[in-house]
Length: 487
Image (cartoon, rainbow, N blue to C red; front, side):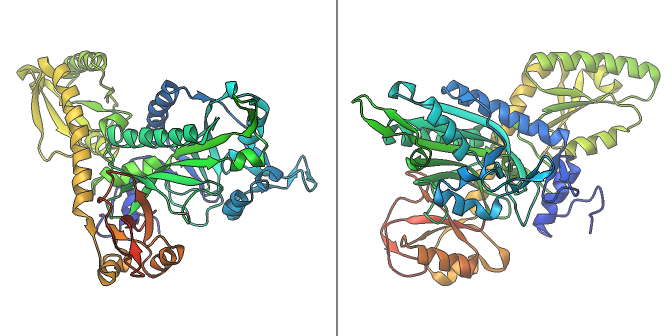
């Protein structure tokens, strides 16, 4: 049943419905019902994605990566060259069997891009000849198709947008260094730009990317206690190099296969942004992620008031824009100020300024931060200094709030009964518990509680390593790992 427009279900009442309501009321996206499992990203939602693109693209280029673009259609034969890779993606593949009004012959079929390791490996083989051609550092901004059975806007859709980095190196050491460098880049972006605290770690064998030697990830806690994998960085070893014969002559004039990496983040980051910061009133955006950081709402009743207010508001808008604030003057006619307040609050704009004749006369403007309970008067003549600082403080406050929430919902457990109780009836927290490193124990834990190992923490990302007993089997364990239910 469709929810009533304007109504936002509370998080405590129904978190999944709350999430859908926030997206609808924030005018971020909607389900593309005529195309199964896909979504339409609306302008406000896409503007957030453009913020993500812009910031990450600058960081990639600053570290020597170049953008390129590869075909959406990949020969099906390419997918089958790397056995583990095809096994991992087989259920999600969309295959083109007809084109040009006829059925394609066997061997001519295409797969719609689920990820690009295979086709990029094919071209790397053409581009690499000597160690002097390495490292090869490529990034692609693209869309992919994965035939998902259970979809949710931004978090899991049949088609989604992402970036996928692909690099080739002369040594495993260099490739592994790239993997960890990108992991740190993602984590810094999540925390410093998105205000989302994350835990960096290594995926278990059962959870790693198909065809990779190892997969590293950043995991964040959402406001229902579940984990969201925000980004991954994969050490592909020489698996794809061997499959696509990507060889080079090393400094000793010996022929060897390249060592490759791949890494990516997607529009799933928008879902993480929503579920980390937003409340029962609607969307909350950190200033660095907000397409509009500050909105000015002019207030007047008479024609002569309109002229005075609009003149001051326009001047103020220009001054704040020059000060680096992304600002909008909401001069739309036919909408009352209260309607505008409501709309911008729903869209998560960090700061609202209300400007009327009395404010101008007193040399002040009324301000309202998105999470503040009360409005605050600010002197008009100091706004260009005050507002950038307010936005910076708001960014930091959101991060600190998210860190506190994670700390309050994180526990260390040593009892299986306590573990089961923590994950009962759909509930979740971040749980640090011992695991014996065995796939059998991992599978049983998931089957009986729905919780999975989100990561084996890197140094400094979780409790210090200590010997213990596996939470499920009782077998010896070297360290605690991170468990949670996840999206």
